[in-house]
Amino acid sequence: MNAEQRNLAIEREAAESSRQMARLLADWSEISEFPRLGLLCIGASNADDILRNPDHQGVADLIHASMTLLRTSFLAAWSISKPSSVVERAVLRRRLEIELAFSESLNAPSGRSVFGQLDYLPSIVIILTHGSRGPVPYLQDERGGGSVTASDAASELGSLPGRNLLVVLPCCFASTVSEPFLENDRIGSVFAPLDEEIGDREVASMLRALGDEIRSLDVFSISRGFSNAET
Image 1 (cartoon, helix red, strand yellow):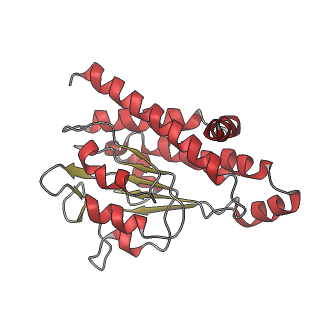
Image 2: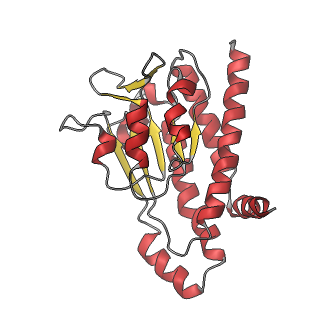
């Protein structure tokens, strides 16, 4: 696949992920209880790491777009059909409680998968690791060390309470690695556009393309997504 074909594939998958997220958020906006919202970024140690590490180009932009979507557009879409008293309580309790967490490794200090240490299913999971498409596809830390099979990662995420909107897999052989995530009905949209070895340039292009699509979503597009789902 040449550079132009890669870019087209990335843009196509980013647009499809955006459409899936709009449908999911439209469904979420109809539930009575405001869901627990959070973003988990694996492969970076903290916010300073994603801003200063040249290997993490595009990550800060994607996180900002994702947090803005959850904090503003989804809150607005959810509140449209709710009584004002319910909305006020939810805003006071939840608006500033979107949890942003980082894990440098796929493995927790205990040696277990970091996914098995979570107490709820994050709304958005960004996994900045290597990927393999061998007989048992797996994810592995950039600097070695931590690893987990794609099947175990998807299963552990899917077993958690909560609602997932998006899993981002900007890694080598992402289409293959993503299969267990796509098969798990507890996991929302999965962004995994290529099935080949990639470099930092492709990763940055993926993250920026997805960030652009996420920024295009707002309360109106979410509402339209709900209307389209009914027809």
